[in-house]
Length: 279
Image 1 (tube, rainbow, N blue to C red):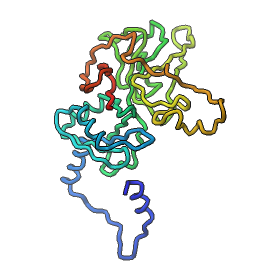
Image 2 (tube, rainbow, N blue to C red):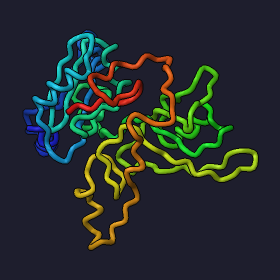
Image 3 (spheres, one colour):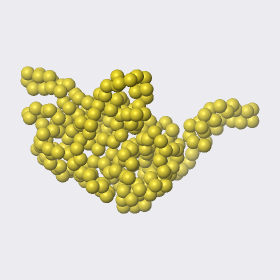
Image 4 (cartoon, helix red, strand yellow):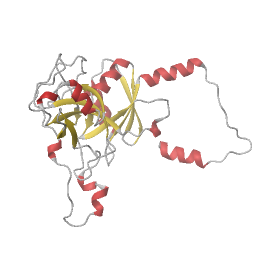
């Protein structure tokens, strides 16, 4: 019985006369133990329209993450897992090593807030490295990158040198974005003293299964719900392969980050910041 069936069953049951609503007083030790467990756990969902082979997924991810200490994988629903770490450092390395994927499907990770809260998780946020193109030379800085990046998502890092300057032909930012909505393709901003309108092109690194019709991750074009309502050859694609950055990214020198990134595992196309593909 999965969590949705269990929740539906609980809500449909009426209390009998001899049944009570109880509010147990948990001992402080038990609550502290639960909190420590949460601090060392992650919940993940593989965005796929079909089921995945759980045993193969568990075997592969243990080999790719290469944690310093052992961790356990618990399957809770179709394509959903709980990862129990012995070390908070390993957990942190996995979080900042993303995005991760399995068989070209995005693995979305969330940090639990309380035991048993899995069914309330939306798995709608994921980190990506995003390239901001067509930026004037005088705006190639960490400050501008942070401002523009926060218009796309929640910025975690801007790649720059020690002087706060962004080298190359574009600015590279890591941001947590809402993947339940269509990906932003451009930003229209006014820059400079003359407030000239500039169109900033957004290109995403390690972008996986993206629908070129609706711009949402998690399903291919042929399975897009919005496509079914369009007849004949009237389908106009708003997205294309141009939104996916070449791997490795061209036109940029990968700088050493102040924060050491975790090992990305045996992937031949994972840069110093980026994801690992699990086949």
